[in-house]
Image 1: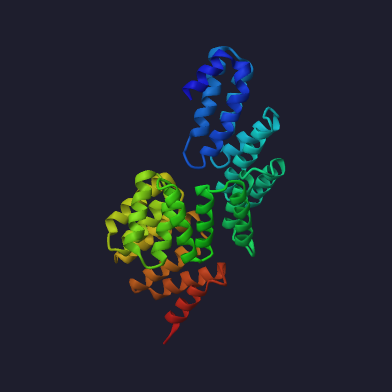
Image 2: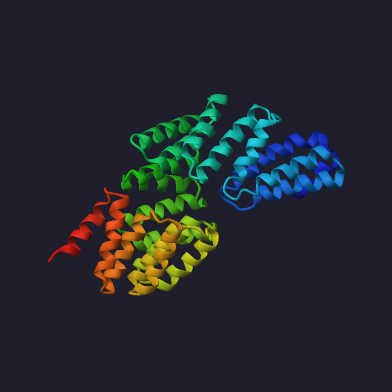
Length: 346
């Protein structure tokens, strides 16, 4: 950022194009690290003021205003950069790809897929659009989406042969498809290619846990979090494994950290409820589920889990009410249906 600032002050007109390209990368980086785009926009604004360059100052002010949208700030910045047409073709591909990732982070899968398709259209021989498309399809997880994601990953393998991230994404896709042995083989390969990639370690840890190897899973999560302490998903999942292994306080410490990273994370609150319930702390568990449901009243897993906590406290009527509500929201929630039938047995 300091180098960018000095370059803009020395040659504001000539350096602007490169600064905007750096802004594309800052918006993409913000999907993993907080406040990067805001720091970049502040540099533009400060350099514009200090160099007396109105165009540069206006760019900084407009981008800072766009970033006031906590949910879609990077999308708004990329809208500005793309609309004003100051990027070359490579920059536009990167911008569409970055905006696709920002839409993905906001849960806007249709918009993410449209952005990645535009990146592919502009650069059919580049892997960026195919990579983003694979991730969005995998997250959407509709009929045929996992297979379509694998097709995009196959194309990435052709365009970026030997790349660690391609092998990792194939392994993660297999994991989400329930093909755990296949996933483990791919993730082992990815780890051998880059032993310091925390995302690979996190995915492999979850596969090992599902395969009944919790101690090995815990070791992988420990390694992932040593490399990236603010990896929220790994914090959340390690908490679950610590709870299973009887380390309630360690699990709660992980969830405290995860919640600082994502204060509105309903899944983190739901996991806190499960950790407390497993430890027999049912009233505290219900309080955690209540907080999760206050944020997302349609969170059926929290309703089902709260039902079990009510049952443990001798409140079958409340348990049945929670299960009925869960089934009202999701009639296909078979676990809740079975629990309800069990509670109704004479």
